[in-house]
Length: 316
Image: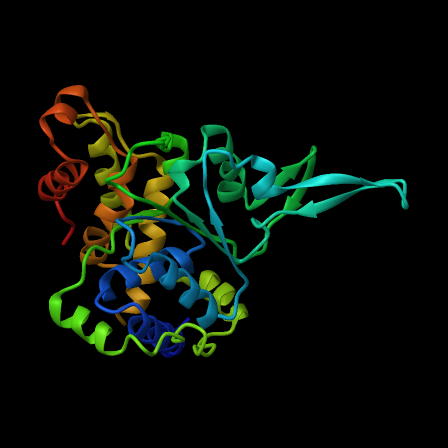
């Protein structure tokens, strides 16, 4: 790959980013990070209060790349079969037929994922990790573009089941949209009558180009020193005195892959320390488990990551 090839891909992704910016306003940086996860085949956990545009963002992404979209509301009575599907006996054919669930889609919005029971949450583990599901002992592959956007409200804990560490580790990133500034919110109010923005979106990138992008990512240069830097950051979380659990090797892989995607997005076409440092909080924080003392005193995972970024020497 040469720079002109990277430039052509970067231009396409920038068009996609620009279109999403017009629909979900004031969230440029978070949308850019979400695209990094999507383009590398990862998954994203959006942790935020209701009404900040999580569902709109998921729908807009699906429309912009012409992919199938399903929204699944997680509730305490949701069963694994409600997600995966079931095998039902057909008397006419004297055979079992598989009725596929909503997980057989390209982009799945798992809304309020922490409201479902642990048994139901675990139904997503195989799907997110292996891109396949088991229905009555039979394996079924998921679409090549399969992408999960999980959401949860960080404030409301009544009637919820915290996601286990194994589930959290399946998400490449955890992002928070947050509240927008006053001028942006005022512009939204002025345009409130234009309520069909998502429906009016046009395809910006063909679906097959997304798969091409994932192949191209492997050729984005990253030096041996920067690969060692990623490992050093991961190792620092495993030795940190405030943590009971550091990040897994899966986090190192996600950080490296997403850094390559960000390098194409910003037009440098090679990974720099800045890419790694910018992505590190989104990739690491949700995977960290604080020790009891730090948890009680209010010390945060983000503070740990910031401390590690300051302490680990940066390659030059």
